[in-house]
Image 1 (cartoon, rainbow, N blue to C red):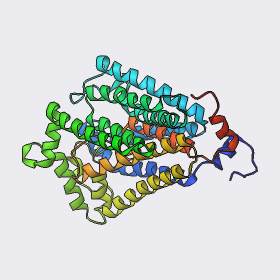
Image 2: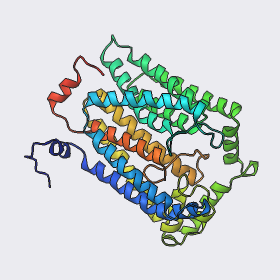
Image 3: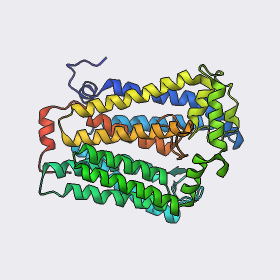
Image 4: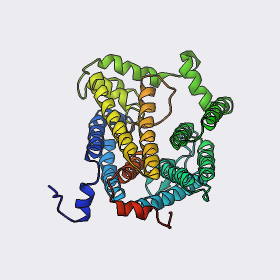
Length: 379
């Protein structure tokens, strides 16, 4: 047990972080391993891999993920912004390199190979983008000599245009919605909010008109007879077979034919084996983390911390909602992981980075450090 009287870096950290937020994230990570042990083996066997291939790799990625969360949460606000800028710049460079050197997977160039590991740079750009956008909005509100709002406006197209070209409509939509949420929380006029909403609808219409894969997904969602709906239909069957209490660990059968049982549709596998009750409990854990994060953000007096924390928790909660809504056929398929539950190294590490940012932003800081935050060195 760490004493309050202990004057060390770890002691200061332990008594200033929100431990209930840490506990919620730890529960998700452990639950992810349990649920992946149900959904991962059938997929691994179909691919000719060892039974627990995906589980072992998830554990392998969890170790650096924990290191990232803890290390980033120690950062001061100034160093946090600098890290976000570095991650954003490197991520955008890797996204551009992926167009030329990345493998084409399902018609998209989203990955770049670093040795034996595949990396999806857009995953790491997301949390860094939120922090930089929050910094731009906060500076624009605080200092009239800094064109912060203009910088935030330029940051959005600079980020989403490469995502559209990959193409990655799901990530584009997520980033845009979160940016609009930051725009709203920053207190800008309703005229602009409504204008952005209209632009968003035009963007969805343009995507439907000019991007065949987007049109196909929307049409399959609206009309089952318009295309292959095997994955969504199979996921829905998982919920009906599992019922309230589930068929028991390892007793599920739908996962053996569901292609993405370890990633996009792990929530459906959980429903069949552990039941709707466990799915509701998992939903409550996500809700607790989101509500706790928003509460901590609201209490923070610093505009930058409040905006960045709100944006990060909004992105986390929205991604979880999209994944679960796809599983129960309330949205077209997006190819988006369930945070800390689905298998995926890039997703897990980027979520760890985002939650490390969140914990650092919501720490209780002495007034001296907050005054230093308002010093002349803005970044």
